[in-house]
Image (cartoon, rainbow, N blue to C red; front, side, top):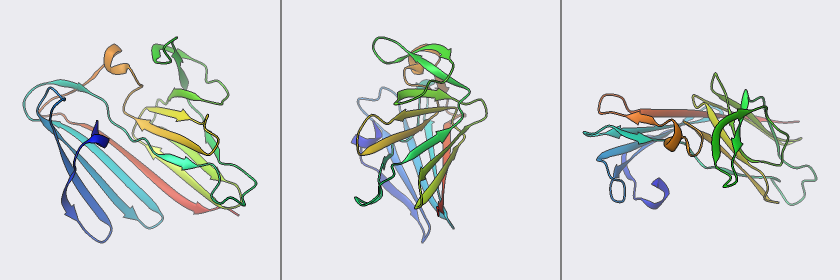
Length: 187
């Protein structure tokens, strides 16, 4: 929903940016989303907060970043996505998670994985660059079936969990998710 809305800049510095998006139609409840980007040395830190102005409502939050499988056309080696999930969400015939947990399967993936102690995933472009993604989130969607890019989504909960086991936002308890993307040269 946020990708279709207008964001207002509420604070900016040389190394940070904070944006605000009011929750409006078609969203049925009043509230706002605050998103912060912070550059720290060799890392990018992102935070999302979903706030309610009055009512209790279900919500889920996360990012949907795509990463090139090859950093340049001359690269012979492709992106490697490395993680140790505690479980994989079983996908139903509609490809949405059923709520059942299974042992993590090998890719290619269009799947959601679960982590008891937060997401940790390493993106490795051999001989070029490594990025470690750490998040307070417990869910990670990986889509790597495209030939040129892979999507790695840290989320507060699995897709469709809002219909199975929703997280609730209240005026005194916002939904907050944070992720840190740390970059290191790979030689």
